[in-house]
Length: 316
Image (cartoon, rainbow, N blue to C red):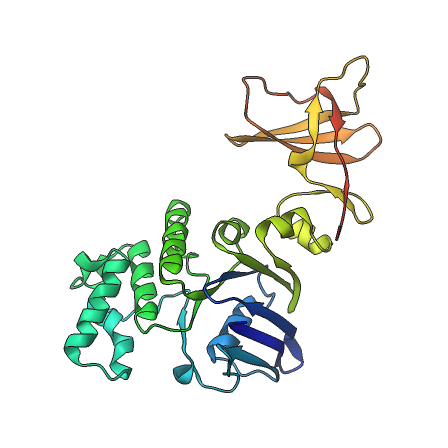
Protein backbone atom coordinates (compact mmCIF):
# COMPACT_ATOMS: atom_id res chain seq x y z
CA UNK A 1 0.00 0.00 0.00
CA UNK A 2 1.29 3.50 -0.84
CA UNK A 3 0.60 5.03 2.60
CA UNK A 4 0.35 2.83 5.68
CA UNK A 5 -0.44 4.17 9.14
CA UNK A 6 -0.03 1.52 11.82
CA UNK A 7 -1.24 1.78 15.44
CA UNK A 8 -0.61 5.53 15.71
CA UNK A 9 -1.16 7.10 19.15
CA UNK A 10 -0.75 10.71 20.24
CA UNK A 11 -0.97 12.12 23.76
CA UNK A 12 -1.13 15.67 25.10
CA UNK A 13 -0.31 15.12 28.76
CA UNK A 14 -3.08 12.87 30.07
CA UNK A 15 -5.28 13.44 27.02
CA UNK A 16 -5.16 10.79 24.30
CA UNK A 17 -5.83 12.65 21.04
CA UNK A 18 -5.25 9.67 18.72
CA UNK A 19 -6.02 6.12 19.80
CA UNK A 20 -4.33 3.28 17.94
CA UNK A 21 -5.05 4.70 14.46
CA UNK A 22 -4.53 2.25 11.59
CA UNK A 23 -5.44 2.76 7.92
CA UNK A 24 -4.03 2.54 4.39
CA UNK A 25 -4.26 4.72 1.29
CA UNK A 26 -3.67 3.61 -2.30
CA UNK A 27 -1.47 5.57 -4.69
CA UNK A 28 -3.48 8.32 -6.38
CA UNK A 29 -6.38 7.96 -3.94
CA UNK A 30 -8.17 10.88 -2.29
CA UNK A 31 -9.01 10.11 1.34
CA UNK A 32 -11.28 12.36 3.41
CA UNK A 33 -10.77 12.38 7.17
CA UNK A 34 -14.23 13.34 8.41
CA UNK A 35 -15.49 14.01 11.90
CA UNK A 36 -16.80 16.57 14.41
CA UNK A 37 -14.66 19.25 16.04
CA UNK A 38 -12.18 17.80 18.51
CA UNK A 39 -12.27 14.27 17.09
CA UNK A 40 -8.52 14.25 16.28
CA UNK A 41 -8.64 14.68 12.51
CA UNK A 42 -6.38 17.76 12.34
CA UNK A 43 -4.01 16.20 14.87
CA UNK A 44 -3.75 13.17 12.61
CA UNK A 45 -2.93 15.40 9.64
CA UNK A 46 -0.21 17.22 11.60
CA UNK A 47 1.31 13.88 12.62
CA UNK A 48 1.37 12.75 8.99
CA UNK A 49 3.05 16.01 7.99
CA UNK A 50 5.66 15.73 10.75
CA UNK A 51 4.44 18.78 12.67
CA UNK A 52 3.52 16.71 15.73
CA UNK A 53 5.52 13.80 17.19
CA UNK A 54 3.71 10.55 17.97
CA UNK A 55 4.10 8.42 21.09
CA UNK A 56 3.71 5.09 19.30
CA UNK A 57 3.01 3.64 15.88
CA UNK A 58 4.52 3.96 12.42
CA UNK A 59 3.94 5.85 9.18
CA UNK A 60 5.18 4.38 5.89
CA UNK A 61 5.03 6.36 2.64
CA UNK A 62 5.95 4.62 -0.60
CA UNK A 63 7.53 1.82 1.48
CA UNK A 64 9.77 4.25 3.41
CA UNK A 65 9.37 4.79 7.17
CA UNK A 66 8.85 8.52 7.78
CA UNK A 67 7.56 8.39 11.37
CA UNK A 68 10.48 10.30 12.90
CA UNK A 69 11.41 12.56 9.98
CA UNK A 70 10.94 16.33 10.40
CA UNK A 71 8.54 18.07 7.97
CA UNK A 72 11.31 19.39 5.70
CA UNK A 73 12.63 15.87 5.09
CA UNK A 74 9.27 14.28 4.33
CA UNK A 75 8.08 14.08 0.69
CA UNK A 76 4.83 15.63 1.92
CA UNK A 77 3.20 19.01 1.22
CA UNK A 78 0.55 20.56 3.47
CA UNK A 79 -2.03 23.23 2.70
CA UNK A 80 -3.24 24.70 5.97
CA UNK A 81 -6.61 26.29 6.63
CA UNK A 82 -5.01 29.77 6.67
CA UNK A 83 -3.13 29.05 3.39
CA UNK A 84 0.11 30.52 4.81
CA UNK A 85 0.78 32.76 1.81
CA UNK A 86 3.36 35.56 2.00
CA UNK A 87 1.57 38.90 1.50
CA UNK A 88 4.76 40.76 0.49
CA UNK A 89 5.37 38.35 -2.42
CA UNK A 90 3.65 38.10 -5.79
CA UNK A 91 1.66 35.02 -6.79
CA UNK A 92 4.65 33.68 -8.76
CA UNK A 93 7.07 34.31 -5.91
CA UNK A 94 4.78 32.47 -3.50
CA UNK A 95 4.64 29.42 -5.76
CA UNK A 96 8.42 29.50 -6.35
CA UNK A 97 9.14 29.67 -2.63
CA UNK A 98 9.22 25.91 -2.05
CA UNK A 99 11.55 25.41 -5.01
CA UNK A 100 14.32 27.49 -3.41
CA UNK A 101 15.25 24.43 -1.35
CA UNK A 102 15.75 22.31 -4.48
CA UNK A 103 18.74 22.28 -6.82
CA UNK A 104 17.12 24.36 -9.54
CA UNK A 105 18.32 27.42 -11.39
CA UNK A 106 16.25 30.60 -11.18
CA UNK A 107 15.05 30.06 -14.75
CA UNK A 108 14.08 26.44 -14.07
CA UNK A 109 12.20 27.40 -10.91
CA UNK A 110 10.31 30.16 -12.73
CA UNK A 111 9.39 27.83 -15.60
CA UNK A 112 8.18 25.16 -13.18
CA UNK A 113 6.14 27.63 -11.11
CA UNK A 114 4.52 29.16 -14.19
CA UNK A 115 3.59 25.69 -15.46
CA UNK A 116 1.87 24.94 -12.15
CA UNK A 117 0.03 28.27 -12.22
CA UNK A 118 -1.16 27.35 -15.69
CA UNK A 119 -2.49 24.06 -14.34
CA UNK A 120 -4.50 25.80 -11.62
CA UNK A 121 -5.62 28.44 -14.16
CA UNK A 122 -3.84 31.37 -12.50
CA UNK A 123 -1.01 32.07 -14.97
CA UNK A 124 -2.47 35.48 -15.83
CA UNK A 125 -2.17 36.51 -12.15
CA UNK A 126 1.51 35.52 -11.79
CA UNK A 127 2.73 39.06 -11.06
CA UNK A 128 -0.26 40.14 -8.99
CA UNK A 129 -0.08 40.76 -5.25
CA UNK A 130 -1.73 38.15 -3.04
CA UNK A 131 -4.16 40.68 -1.55
CA UNK A 132 -5.51 41.41 -5.05
CA UNK A 133 -6.87 37.86 -5.35
CA UNK A 134 -10.20 36.43 -4.21
CA UNK A 135 -10.40 33.78 -1.51
CA UNK A 136 -10.78 31.02 -4.08
CA UNK A 137 -7.79 32.27 -6.07
CA UNK A 138 -5.64 32.45 -2.93
CA UNK A 139 -6.64 28.88 -2.16
CA UNK A 140 -5.41 27.82 -5.60
CA UNK A 141 -2.11 29.65 -5.08
CA UNK A 142 -1.60 27.71 -1.84
CA UNK A 143 -2.41 24.51 -3.69
CA UNK A 144 0.00 25.36 -6.53
CA UNK A 145 2.79 26.14 -4.04
CA UNK A 146 2.35 22.71 -2.46
CA UNK A 147 2.08 20.83 -5.75
CA UNK A 148 5.02 22.48 -7.52
CA UNK A 149 7.53 20.56 -5.36
CA UNK A 150 5.97 17.29 -6.60
CA UNK A 151 5.28 15.71 -3.20
CA UNK A 152 4.48 12.03 -2.75
CA UNK A 153 1.59 12.99 -0.47
CA UNK A 154 -0.62 16.10 -0.34
CA UNK A 155 -2.33 17.05 2.92
CA UNK A 156 -5.23 19.54 2.99
CA UNK A 157 -6.43 20.84 6.37
CA UNK A 158 -10.03 22.05 5.88
CA UNK A 159 -8.94 23.96 2.75
CA UNK A 160 -12.40 25.29 1.87
CA UNK A 161 -13.60 26.43 5.29
CA UNK A 162 -12.79 30.12 4.65
CA UNK A 163 -14.84 30.29 1.44
CA UNK A 164 -18.53 31.07 1.00
CA UNK A 165 -20.93 28.22 0.22
CA UNK A 166 -21.14 28.74 -3.56
CA UNK A 167 -17.37 29.12 -3.98
CA UNK A 168 -16.77 26.01 -1.87
CA UNK A 169 -18.75 23.93 -4.36
CA UNK A 170 -16.74 25.15 -7.36
CA UNK A 171 -13.41 24.84 -5.51
CA UNK A 172 -14.00 21.27 -4.40
CA UNK A 173 -14.65 20.37 -8.04
CA UNK A 174 -11.44 22.19 -8.99
CA UNK A 175 -9.36 20.41 -6.33
CA UNK A 176 -10.75 17.05 -7.40
CA UNK A 177 -9.92 17.79 -11.05
CA UNK A 178 -6.33 18.79 -10.25
CA UNK A 179 -5.85 15.81 -7.94
CA UNK A 180 -7.04 13.41 -10.63
CA UNK A 181 -4.98 15.10 -13.36
CA UNK A 182 -1.79 14.79 -11.30
CA UNK A 183 -2.74 11.41 -9.81
CA UNK A 184 -1.40 12.63 -6.47
CA UNK A 185 -2.21 10.76 -3.27
CA UNK A 186 -4.20 13.21 -1.14
CA UNK A 187 -5.65 13.33 2.36
CA UNK A 188 -7.98 16.16 3.29
CA UNK A 189 -9.57 16.95 6.63
CA UNK A 190 -13.14 18.21 6.82
CA UNK A 191 -16.15 18.35 9.13
CA UNK A 192 -18.44 18.82 6.12
CA UNK A 193 -20.20 15.60 5.09
CA UNK A 194 -21.24 16.92 1.67
CA UNK A 195 -17.64 17.96 0.96
CA UNK A 196 -16.33 14.52 1.86
CA UNK A 197 -19.02 12.70 -0.12
CA UNK A 198 -18.49 14.76 -3.27
CA UNK A 199 -14.68 14.63 -3.33
CA UNK A 200 -13.33 11.51 -1.66
CA UNK A 201 -12.68 8.04 -3.00
CA UNK A 202 -12.61 6.77 0.58
CA UNK A 203 -13.84 8.32 3.83
CA UNK A 204 -12.22 7.75 7.23
CA UNK A 205 -14.70 8.75 9.93
CA UNK A 206 -13.32 9.71 13.34
CA UNK A 207 -14.80 10.31 16.79
CA UNK A 208 -13.00 10.99 20.08
CA UNK A 209 -9.60 10.03 18.68
CA UNK A 210 -10.81 6.75 17.18
CA UNK A 211 -11.46 5.60 13.63
CA UNK A 212 -15.08 4.44 13.79
CA UNK A 213 -15.61 3.47 10.14
CA UNK A 214 -13.74 3.53 6.83
CA UNK A 215 -15.25 3.03 3.38
CA UNK A 216 -16.84 4.68 0.38
CA UNK A 217 -19.54 7.32 0.86
CA UNK A 218 -22.19 4.79 -0.19
CA UNK A 219 -20.89 2.13 2.22
CA UNK A 220 -20.85 4.47 5.20
CA UNK A 221 -24.24 6.01 4.45
CA UNK A 222 -26.04 2.76 3.65
CA UNK A 223 -24.28 0.57 6.24
CA UNK A 224 -23.40 2.67 9.33
CA UNK A 225 -21.38 0.68 11.83
CA UNK A 226 -22.78 2.31 14.98
CA UNK A 227 -25.17 4.97 16.32
CA UNK A 228 -22.56 7.75 16.06
CA UNK A 229 -22.12 7.11 12.33
CA UNK A 230 -25.89 7.02 11.84
CA UNK A 231 -26.33 10.36 13.63
CA UNK A 232 -23.33 12.12 12.08
CA UNK A 233 -23.84 11.01 8.48
CA UNK A 234 -27.14 12.38 7.19
CA UNK A 235 -30.44 12.26 9.04
CA UNK A 236 -32.03 9.16 10.47
CA UNK A 237 -34.87 7.71 12.52
CA UNK A 238 -33.70 5.38 15.28
CA UNK A 239 -36.61 2.96 15.67
CA UNK A 240 -35.36 0.62 18.37
CA UNK A 241 -32.02 -0.64 19.61
CA UNK A 242 -29.80 -1.07 16.50
CA UNK A 243 -32.74 -0.53 14.09
CA UNK A 244 -33.23 2.56 11.93
CA UNK A 245 -34.66 3.99 8.72
CA UNK A 246 -33.42 6.99 6.72
CA UNK A 247 -36.05 9.75 6.20
CA UNK A 248 -35.89 9.51 2.39
CA UNK A 249 -36.54 5.74 2.54
CA UNK A 250 -40.03 6.24 4.01
CA UNK A 251 -42.96 6.30 1.58
CA UNK A 252 -45.81 8.54 2.69
CA UNK A 253 -49.34 8.88 1.33
CA UNK A 254 -52.92 9.62 2.15
CA UNK A 255 -54.81 6.86 4.00
CA UNK A 256 -57.10 4.48 2.11
CA UNK A 257 -59.54 1.74 3.06
CA UNK A 258 -56.70 -0.80 2.90
CA UNK A 259 -54.06 1.48 4.42
CA UNK A 260 -55.33 3.38 7.47
CA UNK A 261 -53.63 6.50 8.82
CA UNK A 262 -50.59 5.83 11.02
CA UNK A 263 -49.67 9.37 11.96
CA UNK A 264 -50.23 13.09 11.56
CA UNK A 265 -47.95 15.75 10.06
CA UNK A 266 -46.87 18.22 12.75
CA UNK A 267 -44.28 20.22 10.80
CA UNK A 268 -43.42 20.94 7.15
CA UNK A 269 -40.09 22.46 6.03
CA UNK A 270 -39.86 23.42 2.35
CA UNK A 271 -36.24 23.39 1.07
CA UNK A 272 -36.74 23.82 -2.66
CA UNK A 273 -35.76 20.50 -4.18
CA UNK A 274 -36.77 18.54 -1.06
CA UNK A 275 -39.50 18.78 1.57
CA UNK A 276 -39.01 17.65 5.17
CA UNK A 277 -41.94 16.41 7.25
CA UNK A 278 -42.11 15.66 10.97
CA UNK A 279 -44.71 12.98 11.67
CA UNK A 280 -46.24 12.20 15.04
CA UNK A 281 -47.22 8.53 14.84
CA UNK A 282 -50.26 7.20 16.63
CA UNK A 283 -48.11 4.64 18.47
CA UNK A 284 -46.40 7.56 20.26
CA UNK A 285 -43.22 7.65 18.18
CA UNK A 286 -42.02 10.44 15.88
CA UNK A 287 -40.57 10.09 12.39
CA UNK A 288 -38.76 12.42 10.02
CA UNK A 289 -39.69 11.98 6.34
CA UNK A 290 -37.97 13.57 3.33
CA UNK A 291 -39.55 13.66 -0.13
CA UNK A 292 -38.47 15.15 -3.44
CA UNK A 293 -40.41 18.18 -4.63
CA UNK A 294 -41.93 16.36 -7.59
CA UNK A 295 -45.45 17.78 -7.74
CA UNK A 296 -47.55 20.83 -7.01
CA UNK A 297 -49.11 19.05 -4.04
CA UNK A 298 -47.67 19.74 -0.59
CA UNK A 299 -48.88 17.86 2.48
CA UNK A 300 -50.06 20.30 5.14
CA UNK A 301 -49.68 20.33 8.92
CA UNK A 302 -52.51 18.30 10.44
CA UNK A 303 -52.81 15.90 7.48
CA UNK A 304 -53.18 12.27 8.51
CA UNK A 305 -50.90 9.96 6.52
CA UNK A 306 -49.99 6.32 6.07
CA UNK A 307 -46.34 5.25 6.06
CA UNK A 308 -44.39 2.40 4.53
CA UNK A 309 -40.73 1.50 5.09
CA UNK A 310 -38.29 -1.34 5.72
CA UNK A 311 -36.14 -0.96 8.80
CA UNK A 312 -32.40 -1.69 8.69
CA UNK A 313 -29.97 -2.92 11.33
CA UNK A 314 -26.84 -1.05 12.38
CA UNK A 315 -23.71 -2.76 11.13
CA UNK A 316 -25.75 -4.80 8.67
